[in-house]
Image (cartoon, rainbow, N blue to C red; front, side):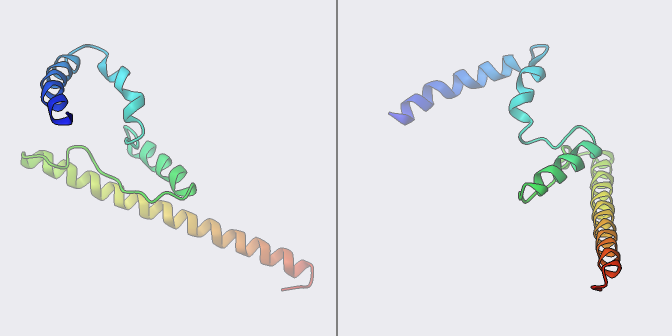
Amino acid sequence: MTGMIEKVLRPFLFVFFKIFLKLPGHRKIMRPFANRFIGGETLDEAIEKGKELAARGFSLTFAYVGEESRDVNAAREAELAYISLIDRINEEKEKDRQQEKEEINRSCLALKKGGVC
């Protein structure tokens, strides 16, 4: 039964989505469904969303749309985007490390004032 349903639905869905994707405003309709899988339109948006998810205990991967380009210039652009992403993630990690160090130092100073450290 499932195979028969698939045989009937597959061509229908293929044509439906082919037409749907040409309609103006289709992105606005699809955005809520896609947002679950899209970090953002910019590097800053993706980093912020990644931080939020990591804080909630999720493991993350980042992918740049355009990474499977067949054109040399587009491939170079994708390479530069990945390098920027890696650099930015490393910068954010360093910021987090610095904040942790500052918190430890503040705690130690507070303890010293209390005669504990």
